[in-house]
Amino acid sequence: MAGHSKWANIQHRKGKQDKLRSKLFSKLAKEITVAAKMGDPDPEKNPRLRLAVKEAKANSVPKDVIDRAIKKSQGGDAESYDEIRYEGYGPNGVAIIVEAMTDNRNRTASNVRSYFTKNGGDLGQTGSVAFMFDRVGEITYPASAGDADTVMMAALEAGAEDVESGEDGHWIYCADTDLNDVSAALESSLGESESAKLIWKPQAPADVDDLETAQKLMKLIETLEDDDDVQNVTANFDLTEEVAAQLG
Image (cartoon, rainbow, N blue to C red; front, side):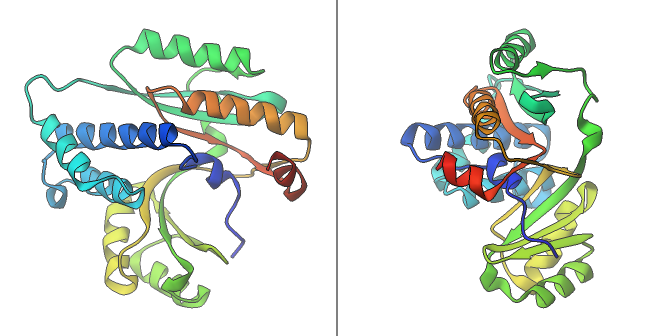
């Protein structure tokens, strides 16, 4: 069981400033609205909504914000969003997947292409980098949930496929179609998880040991994440400890 990869920290940074926190809340609320609009507004009857609400709570989104997002989905004037995936390469050939929800495809495509171009990357066609990732469910537990062997046994019994444990916690992986069932089963044995969501997991992250390349990659990812239409950004690289320390 290897330590949890550093790429995950890039995928779901919570931000240090109020502006970033507000933007995160907005994106999580958008996912809740879309999930509720596509199915039942009751999280217990709508697996996608249940997971969206869990993720929002894990990021300390206030209950009233969650409730408003669900209520908004039931209004006749609720916005209609398209879910789009963009794929491309960043500096040094690093593969990047961008997931977006937008009410204007042309605006979002133009913006994403511009971000890649201006930051040393290249936007590709759908499928150009997805083969380097696995679409899986990821369920996160704190280290206090138990030792590695205990969590591994509980995960396998729940139908999970793999577990990574480290000092900071446990990351349990399952087939994307099994996420809701595995998450529910784990709650019975390990209690409430910190997070349960679908992710793109890099198959073989490449180490970035050059500070300049790392700075360019982080600038591209931060620019993408700052766009209101972009929900998630995932890249297939790890920063070496030396470079991570230099970035601060």
